[in-house]
Image 1 (cartoon, rainbow, N blue to C red):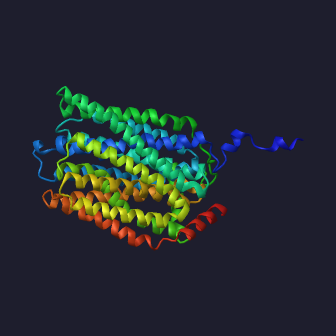
Image 2 (tube, rainbow, N blue to C red):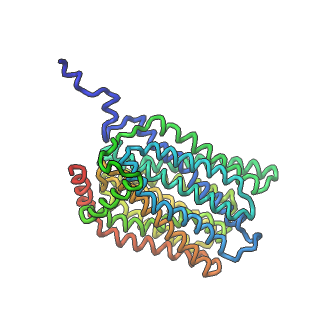
Image 3 (cartoon, rainbow, N blue to C red):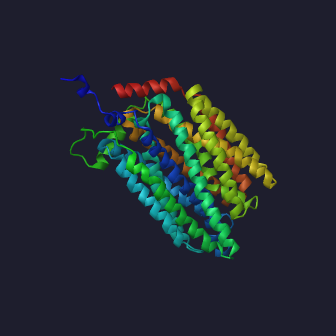
Amino acid sequence: MNSDQNKPSADENSRLIGNASRKELLAWALYDFANSGYTTVVQTTIFSAYFVGVIAGAAQGLAPGLSTLLWSLAIGIANFIVMISGPLIGAIADQRACKKRFLLISSVGCIASTALLALVGPGDIGLGMVLVTLSAIMFAYGENLIAAFLPEIVPEENMGRMSGYGWSLGYFGGLLTLGICLAYITWAKQRGLPETHFVPVTLLITAAIFALAATPTFLWLHERAMPVALYQGLSNLQIGYARLAHTFKEAARFRDLLWFLVTLGVYQSGVSTVVVLAAIYAQEVMGFDTQSLIVLIMVVNVTAAVGAFICGHLQDRMGSVPTLAITLLIWIVAVIVALFASKTAHMWIAGNIIGLAMGASQAVGRALVSKFSPTERAGEFLGLWGLVNRLSAIVGPLSYGLINYWSNGDHRMSLLSTLAFFIVGLVLLCKVNESRGKAAALMGDAG
C-alpha cells in the first residue's frame, strides 16, 4: 500500500486541533468584528445615552440618578442570568460538541432583540429594559462560545496573537457600525428629524451589520470537538452540572486559573463600568451630544484596536501577566484623568488612554484563560471566564449606579469605585504564576 494513502488530506489536516486555515482564522476573528457593533451602539454609546436621557429621562418624572440605576439594573440582570447559565452551556457544548449550533442560536437572538429595540420610545421603560436584558444575554452567550473555539484553531504559543487580532478586528467592526450610524444621524439632523427617529434606525443598522458580518463564521469555522461518551442517559442540564462539579473538584490543580479568574473579576468590574457608562458620563458630566459621543467612541475604537494588536504580540513575547500589569497601570491613569477632567479636551485625552487600555486588557485576559484551559474542556473553562465577566458586569455598573443614585447623580463620586477596581486588580495579579498555570493545562490534556 502507498504510504501517502495514510496521510491526511489538506482539508483533513486543516481540521486538526490548532491547525486552522487562514480562511477559518479569519472567520473566527470576523465574529468579533460582527458583534462589536452591538456593544458599541447599544451598551456603550447611542442607546445607553438615549435610554437615560429620553426613554427614562427627566421628562418621565424620575428622580435624579434613577434612570442611570435602571440602566445598570437591566445590564446587571442580564449578566446575572449569564453568570448562572453560561458555564452550563459551555459544558453542554463540550459534551455534545455543539458550540457552533449554540453560537448560531445566540447570534440570532441578539440580532433580533437589537432590531426590536427600534420599537422602544420615550416612556417605554419596561419594554426597553426587557429587550436590553435579552440582547445582552444573547450577546454574552455568543462571546463565551466564540472564545471557546480559540484553543481549537491555534497552538498555545499563538493564542495571544490570535486573540489580539480578534479584538483588534472587533474594534474596527464597532468603528464601521458607528461610522454608518453617524452618517445617518448627520443626514437626519440636517432634515430636522428628531432623536426619536434616528436612534431607532441606528439599532436596525447595527442588527443588519451583525447579521452580515457574522455569516462567514458559520460558513467557514469548523467544530473540531467530538462528542464525549461520558454521562450517558443524563439530560443536557444534568451533564452540565456533572462536568462543572468535576471542574470545581479539580480546583487545586488549576489554582492559577482560578486565582486569575478572581483577579479578572475585580479589574473587569472596572472595565465593564466604563463600557456601559462611559457615554453617560461624557453626556451628563462633560456635556457631549450624540454626534460628539459617536466621534469620541469612534476614535477610542481606533486606539483600542491598536492596543489589542500591540499587546497580542507583546504577551507572546514577554508573557501575559506582565503585559496585563502594564495595561492595568494604563487604566488607572485613564480613570484619574477622567475623574479630574474639567474641559472637553481632557475627556478626549482620557478616552484615548481608555481605548488603548481596553483593547489590551480584553485581548490579554481571554488569551490567558485559554492558555490555562485544557483543550478538551475549552468550552467549560471559557464558560467560567464568561461567568466571571458577567459577575463583574453586575458588580461594576451596579456599584456605579447605586453610588450615583445615593449621591443624587454625582458621577465623579461614582467613578471612584471604578478606580478602586483597577488598583485592587493590579495587586491581585501579582499572585498569578503563568508558567505553573500553563503546565496545569497541559496535564489536563494528558489526563
